[in-house]
Image (cartoon, rainbow, N blue to C red; front, side, top):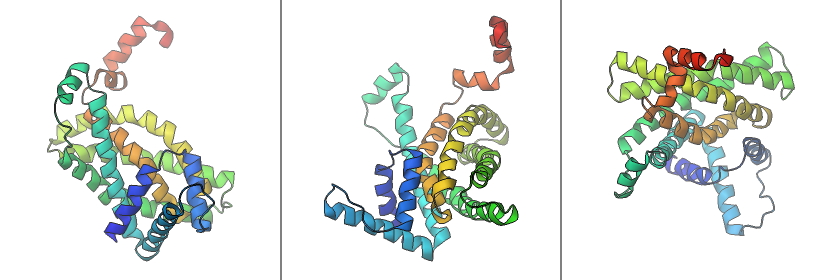
Length: 267
């Protein structure tokens, strides 16, 4: 099963360039109608993709939690590899020239550490979160599925509850896993959480609106995991930036006071 799921997400990671809404509609169409749509691609490629999708569907039906856990871990591992490449490309010119003279090396220990976050938190928590969220909004609040109120209620709950919790746990986990002390972990969380939260709050409501509107519940974590391929890259990059000067705009009271003093119109 692990090999099958690895093959599935290897294909998905190469075809994730579509927009959030388009990806959501594609997953919805695949779940509702597994027949191969017309395409200009060779027949063998379409058949292989269809088999991969059916294989994933079978794994999800037989072992839903295991499938979600494995897929989350794999995608977060891919995301950290991307984050390391982004960190290399965005390094200072002197550091970049120094690195270019060497072979590209991936910190596989860090990849495993980040991947374990997907295995241990995103997979199991995400699986039950989307199941229970749908149940509560559908039956407790008695909102009609796919209605604007139904989708909006889910988006708000996800943005206010799971989003900030995910960020806090991720940065705390990365600090502890790297061997830092509790005091240093707290400082790092404060340093990284505040810059990441506005970006998270700006992007995820849009992503989740498409998710809750178009994607069946059992495929919603798959859709989120595909977006997390980039989210994990962004979070890993934020965590690796350390005490970058731009972070002080979010965390330093003195910096904010200085900015207001220099530009009174800001206040």
